[in-house]
Length: 559
Image 1 (cartoon, rainbow, N blue to C red):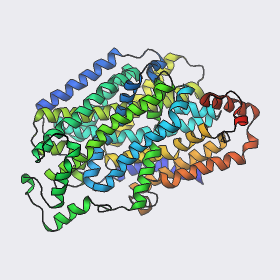
Image 2: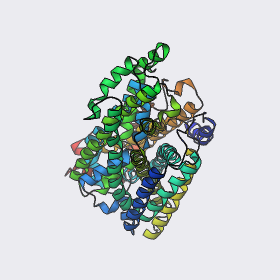
Image 3: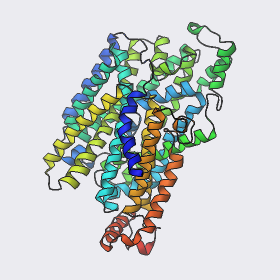
Image 4: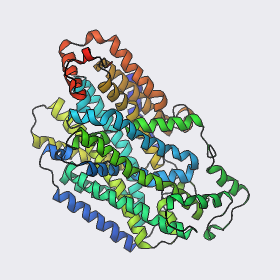
């Protein structure tokens, strides 16, 4: 029954993605903008040069950057991996659209890094291989676990990347004045070229540069936006409160009428009050929990711990990454409030573009707008590159070279990885032409999958010596099945899976993840007599390496 449910969900998902597309208007101002276009093209050329100069020649270079990245550099790469179009554009858009409820995204996404630091960073680096599927497959001594984990990695990468291409398509369309679908293909071409040549080494070096571009592009315009809205412009994250207070009294920009009254004023007030834009305490907590465990289960973030020299650098890079990420999230509410000041009655049609439309309406000038667009594209490209690398490594390393063709050469691995990078990118672009939801909502669905599958399997693989391959498979199949059903239900507009429902596709992990943990534990105990001594010895040796234990884990008893 469970297999049939999973199969139906996988088969229906692409169809529903297309069928669920609403009449969302992606345009803000379609016209060619010369100076912003030159700035964006200049950054593209820079990314390509860095990629070409960092050309990968071995699987180690291609998948884990030769394990030579330092803590600050890896922290910047983690932040750049993380600060996708969802963070750069989506969070400000959700705060603009949902007000107080949108804070759940910031709390969940940053809180997940605490779990990463406490539970996974050091043990994963001590293991020291290429992918998360490889770790789980070795820990449970099971090709089945490896294959399921690799499949989950691909599903997460595709779902997550759809949101990034939507953001990149919106920005390219705004800069170059081309249609949304053409701009998606354009951005995909740029990403593929430097990714195929450079692998993880070039991706990491580009991500360090892209972090600098995106954080400065995000922060610098705020000084001028605040000043144009009546603030002093000294420190925007501490100044927008007065503008928000003015909004609660109906004070908006002169170009928007200057003063809101009646139902329009009441609607704006409700937006910034708890539950004023809908939702309840359950929905809020479910969203925060899902994003936290999803963050700690994302394969393209976890693999970052394999690119550093040792576990100390792995821990430090998480702290640096969290600092870099916090700088952006601290400023996201400013864009939402400023956006309401300049465009107080906008809805979903402008939410994902509010970081560009607000400066445009504030008449900041083409240089600021061009640099802001370059920052948004840097955020999308850096994350898409990491996601495509994760999906390609799942196929080339975990499917092909380990299970299907164990004796293949390094050259074959690189060819398979590059071919599948192109295949995944094409599939993602096709789906991104008709995105099913807001950017941050699509990303939240990817987090729900990661939080209900990889997170519980990883927690028990590291911290429960009694967990075995049967429990891991049962827990992961349960989590994957239920999250895919929730995603299909969301797109089919079934209330149970819609926003605010008990199993909303964006926040289903609050129910599914604890059950996945319980299933793993119960099935493992019920099947303990089916595990061979050789398998137990193999798992024991890995656990001793993860925790630096001198004797058998069964004697030290982690469980």
